[in-house]
Length: 121
Figure (tube, rainbow, N blue to C red):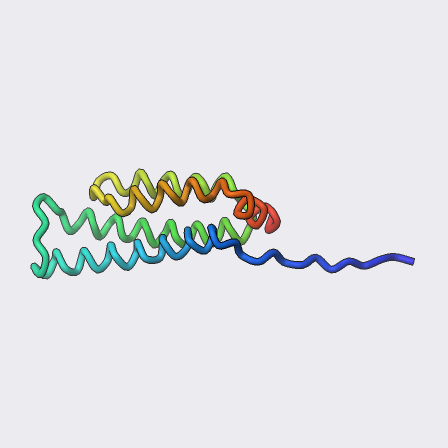
């Protein structure tokens, strides 16, 4: 007689939710900042709206990549995307981007995040 065990899906850890929500908020902040600067409602010295728009576009692509890699169990690629996100924030001098990428990278080493992503492999 063969025993059948059901594989239960792990619940998304809080650290992973923090990473994803932070990246989503960063996208909204970047597009909002672009809109405010390009319409003249906000003036920041040496702020180039084009750099902010390009950075916001990269943030969207990175968010999609993070979701894809988290759901497909690719932990190293997940961390690489976070590092790329940090590098992409450099031209626009996006301090919020640096901070979010920094603590997201640290949170990706949390045991529950590693366990969740590796369980999807």
